[in-house]
Image 1 (cartoon, one colour):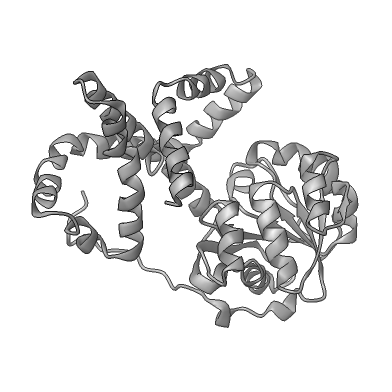
Image 2 (cartoon, one colour):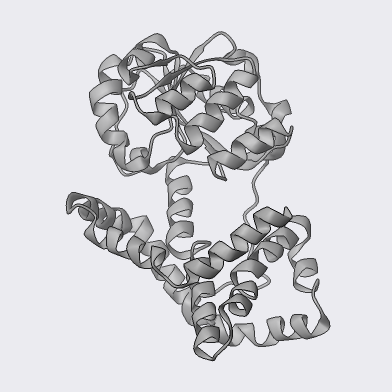
Length: 337
């Protein structure tokens, strides 16, 4: 049970001063995949003065990479020609690509960089012992990784050394983190197991749950006869301003930032809705993540052709809230806010 006396584990935050970009300055980096993280990290590394080649298929992402000034080659060729290989394709396809194009072409002394502990921790990929295996994880989507780098800003994340063949794996992970701009803000050191456990928990029971919570609140208001615009503005639209407050202030200041009435209701009534029962279910979900049950469920869903996944996506896409969301997005774009 968490109380105010529960000890908080604290970790050192590593910044640019802790990393030496010179460790990878003369090494060619292969960015495997040019999607959300791939395009952002490849461009940031190039802007940091590093040599980058993109490995991928001939698709729209390859066209985008060439348009951004990169040489694009098949993944197997990119691996053969590079010293550092960045695994930036989705978790669910990494094992197949690794087996077909990466593992047969690895040579002694190369570095495998993962942006998630998923494939390594759950045994989907087992690298040979003659390469370094490290973790460099921005804690945000690729678009923000690129936008903040261009503005000279940073973003939080994690790094770690999983397998240290060279004796310098940890230092190389820090150098890569610096190259993508991660250390401008700072990063903590972690493991593959810890990173993927925390990440999957957040996706299964943490931040993603905000969407379900707000959708329930929207539906309750609409059921009571409130207009869709009013219901949306006081749930999803309001979230934008709460998030901005939390990013700029301490939690205590953010909670008290509104009117006394809003602060009183938030402190006294919300705990009657968000109860200890929810925390118990969070604990249960964390155990399912740690045991691998959540990943096994996902693997079975993929083998079956993702029927449940696709059905749930359709239900979200077809929810009536989509119409009012579209209106708010159009107005936001038109007004610049």
